Image (cartoon, rainbow, N blue to C red; front, side, top):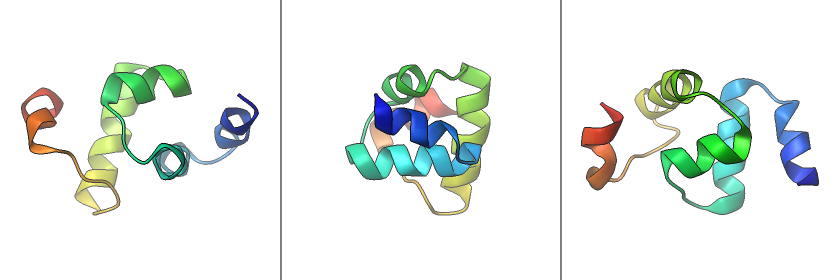
Length: 66
């Protein structure tokens, strides 16, 4: 839990990237719950990370991500 508090101090996108670096991979819901974020917040920032090439989405989740 202590490491999640450190992540909260980072910018929104850096927080998500740092989380993924620590866990390796996870799904949208798992990450959203772990970071305490809303669907809209997660979706907006994850789309930007995907579009910039920092994050990849597995094909099985593309339809859900939109």
